[in-house]
Image 1 (cartoon, rainbow, N blue to C red):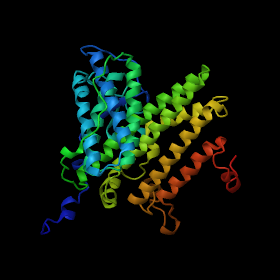
Image 2: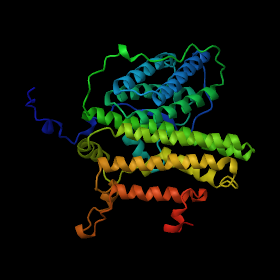
Image 3: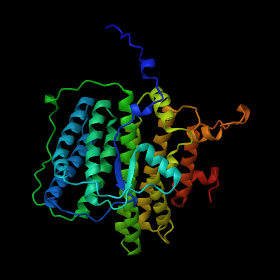
Image 4: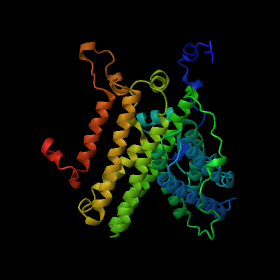
Amino acid sequence: MQKDNLNTKNFLKTNDYTLYKPNLTFAIPHSGTIPTNFVSTDLDIEKVAGHLANLNTEVLHVIDYLTSEATWANETAFVIEKLRIVILPLISALIPIKLNPLMNVPNQTERFDKYNSYFRIAEYRNMDLLQLLKEDVNLLQAILIEMQIIKMDEQEIINFLRGVAIRFGTYQQILGVEVKGSNSKAKNFNSSTYIDPLLYDCRISSAFYRWFTCHWDFAINVIHARYHYDAAGKYFANGDKKGAAEAIVKAAILIRATTADMVFGCSMPAKTYQEFIRPSMGQGFSGNDNPQWAVFAASKKSLLAMPGIKNDEAIISAWAFFLEKYLQDIEVHTTIADKLVGERPSLIIDELNQGIPDEEKDRTSATAGLRNLHYMRLAEFSFLNSYPILFTLFKLK
């Protein structure tokens, strides 16, 4: 096969990143948590609830299948495609839902607004549950298509879908519609009829598309995690320790799902990230500017401050589960940064280094900064005594 004479490097070299960014906007509630109100005008809520229940049944079945069966990449893609098809009736049922009447609220904090503007995330003050559900299922379908193209790691697909299952379960619970006789039956997948699709490379446009959609799904997972953290606080205040523990576990699964989002969004060559994605954000851009994460972090801080919640035996195991997923999250994040950024500093340090003589510049790598976060997370949950050696090495207080 002859090599194409097209000079791809020069063809793709441009600073006009709008050529590659998705021309779409993703809507989330301004409150930073799941709305519990919904308007059912011109919508068959029972039908929506039925489609939602069917879809969640299939999500759980796919998780079980991928967990218990040895599969090849094309078989995994086949399972994902079948799941995507199950989404279509729900998407169709939600078509009447409109976002037009909603009031868009720019974030009042400049750095948070910069983050939202870059990722084209719109916060709406009066967004209801059904409007968020519509955004969620449309996004899910788009991501499932991309997962087949990039042949995403199977375990991360499982982590991703576990978050989806929590999200859809929460929608079902809030809708509160009893579904009789779901027509979705768990059945074995027959991969023998499946034709493996053509493999695509990580084109710039696709890389930007995944970069944006992963952050949208990240936002959905985080606001659901915040919802369950707030629920855990209410359960604990009312003496329901089992309910509080279950809510913390759900939040942990959702946080681990954000890690899978990062794996999905960063499925690109390092050169693609360095030459296109990274420069498009501009100096000083940081994950610390994520407003949805900031709201969740504040909720987590409030929950941990509740008297007795750190030493209640019924909840300790839930906190230990959360810490494990929390640490896995930062570990995977560090590995991704090593792949895409290497030994280079973060964009924040790049900004701080402007105008400083070379010998005085901060050379701390982005990965080193993330490792600091690892130890900060350990310190935050030091009350668990999960790693006694830390007290010997670092004398945490």
